Image (tube, rainbow, N blue to C red; front, side, top):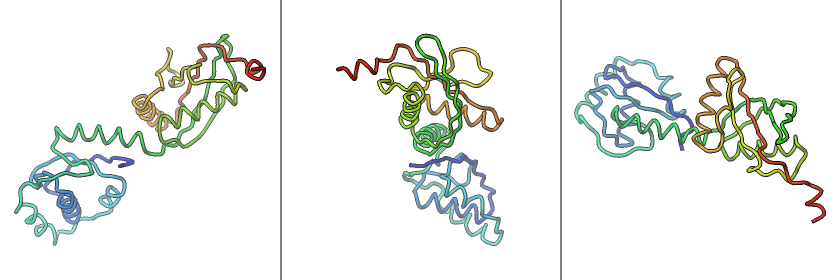
Length: 216
């Protein structure tokens, strides 16, 4: 899976070797692409780095262009997101979902825990690397157990939300992959502004007694 998709807008006026590199990808993966026209596409991190390092080479431009013009469209399928503008929007969205679900994500956040009796524990700062929503929620669950000192804590005993420092209201739920995508997008915006995000764990029912479990 592509960890990170980097959007680009192709121009027929691109100079070689960048044009040559894109032409190579189109040929290699058999895209249905007309290189005489503009189109939007996305590259994986490795291909994007290669593309960015390429510099214009006027001598090879005309030769490469002729190869592309000889075959106006190239048919087939591909593992990276290069398509017509309409198809690209869909592919970019799918690529972003896949990327957001699978790529390792570094984050720092303040964790707030509010117990079922209305009292709140002191907030604590955490930094970690996570890949999926399940991994992140599991990490939060372990922290809840550690901070409440109750090993009987279950995930359905509480709900998890997130919000910015200045945001009012209950916040946004953090429960599935779509929530995680929104969370990471919001986190990236805040990180760029050097602002912190907050994770809230609200206990909705009393934890089972540890003493009871020991007696049983």
